[in-house]
Structure formats: structure tokens, C-alpha cells
View 1 (cartoon, one colour):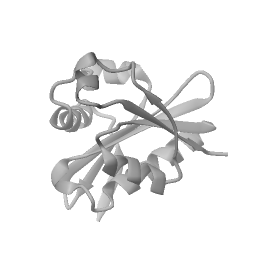
View 2 (view 1 turned 90 degrees about the horizontal axis):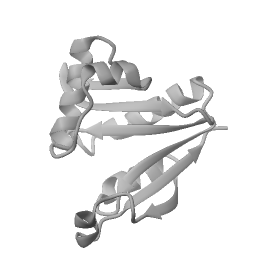
View 3 (view 1 turned 120 degrees about the vertical axis):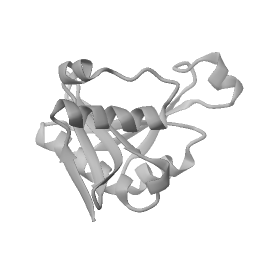
Length: 149
């Protein structure tokens, strides 16, 4: 059974960071202090006591929000990402968010399929967000949106 719970203590936020670092080892990851100051809702996923993923939901000043699910590679395609997205959407809805966005890369088809399954619609392609190195790899950012009202 998948257990989703808020990451609130320093130890839990450190676990949240560990998932992000495992999935995105070459990107900067915020410190625990930065995560506390950031205002996002952080979520951890465990299965049978084992950490399997983390996610976040945030709200913008203009009424929109963002959701970010991350599942460790060994635990993908087991329903964890779907559970994350629905829980993060509920958190956003409870906070009064009217629509949420998510970002993916063009070379990450599984997350795009997952977002589409969870009622997200592809709304745009951003070829300027990433470095030229990413463009050489023919990777761009896909912008996905889901209306919550």
C-alpha cells in the first residue's frame, strides 16, 4: 500500500531532497532551510516503509499552481505517480488554486502519458528554458495544465 504524507520535519524534508537528488543529480536542490521558506507543500511516498518518491504543490499569487511528482526509478509504473498527482491536485484545490501546471521534457514520454491520464492538457512547448546543450539533445520543456474548477 502506498502511504502519502506531508514532509514537515527537517528529517522528512531531507528525505524529500534525497529523492530529487537521486532523480536529478546534476541539478541544484534547495536546502532544507530554503524548502521551509519556499511555501510549497511537500509530500513523501512510502510503500511498506520504504521511501519511493516525493512531490510538491505550490500556489502562485495569481491563483494558479504547480505540481511536481517524482518517483524513484525502481518504483515507477506501480501507481505511485498517479496517487501523487491526485493528492497534489487535491492540496492545490484545497488552497483555492483554479488550475495547475506541470513541466516535462520531450524525452520523458511516461510522465507525459501520466499527466494526460490525469486530465492534464498539453498547452505549450518551451525551447528557450533549457541550455543549448539540451537543444542539441533535441529536448525541450513541455507545459501541461489542468483546470481544477
